[in-house]
Figure: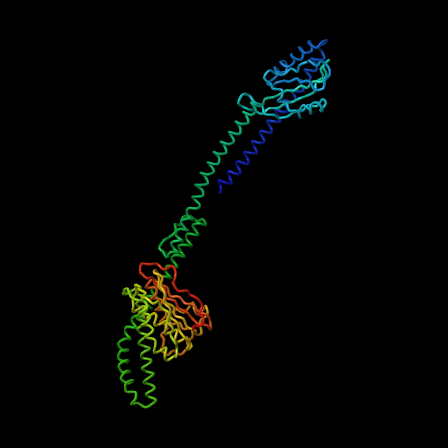
Length: 495
């Protein structure tokens, strides 16, 4: 930008100087040409008035002698043309310089000379010499010739030397301007590089910060604004690194705590479960109030056991120690097993499960137990929240991806609830009574299972209309998902 603006300024100034020089040079030559022409007119008048002319031949000789005389006075050519319409001496010739084409003189200038009285008239023209051209000037004035009437005296001035001088000056200005621009460019480059280099370094390091590499630092030199920025960035990086380290340590402590507590509780949980099952098996021998307590104890022990299992599973995901057992299986068969496992709950809720699956097999590379658990969780949620209305499960595949959707017609969720539906221990309605006793970790684990397979688990819901969950999996683990074969549309009334 500096070089561009400097170029504009330089060429503008150079153009102005060139125009000024050309105009000044022309005005100077014009003034000289007018003075020379005025002197030539006086010379012609004195010569004609002092000569004794009695016949046409003598007059012709006198007129012919005037042209060389005026040419010798300077680098100019002369034409003494007879004005049209003169009745006297019809055979009298108009003397012209040997190498001058008098037709070069424009008719407009001749008219101006005849009508201008004793005033000098001039016009700029282009003179041609061989194959080259040069600017010129023609100055004319009327002259009275004895016996012959009115003539027109024209002096043609060649500005070739002046043009050479102007060309040289313009060439010097152009070369000087280019050299000046080169110097400005070099100076601007080094100055800009010195100013911008630390800024670029700060930008590069800040991009590394954004990628998570907080070990990088910006060079701190001097006390200018860039150095102050560098120190601020370095302080920010150190502060962020300390906070991230603290959060990482806290997260590891929390994960270790969950894992340790889950493992430590398994032994007493096993003992409590065995004792509870003994009591639950003998509940018919107990009083009605104790019988009810035994049933509640059995339900809560089952729920507690599921919670421990989910906590252990989450802790394994947090520790990055989960490895899927991938095999090629029929997705329709997994869907069928998940439906079979949830049928008792659907019967208790009087909920119909509608199935829409392809007629052939849908072979997918996946971990069967984890995907079956995921679908079982989605179906259980749909039945629990479906208000007894039909639940629909659909399967589709396009050769690169396979998808399963589970749709209900329950209460639905708003956007805030959909944003948190996969959070751990979050429930849309904490007060809701669930017949299967959820732990609040089911959908969080389902999301982890989907990500473990490089798949998608998405939700779409409309308040008071229903909810749709869509699981999309690559047919081959090496494939990358770009689209899903099932649409993610708002839930509609099921048939």
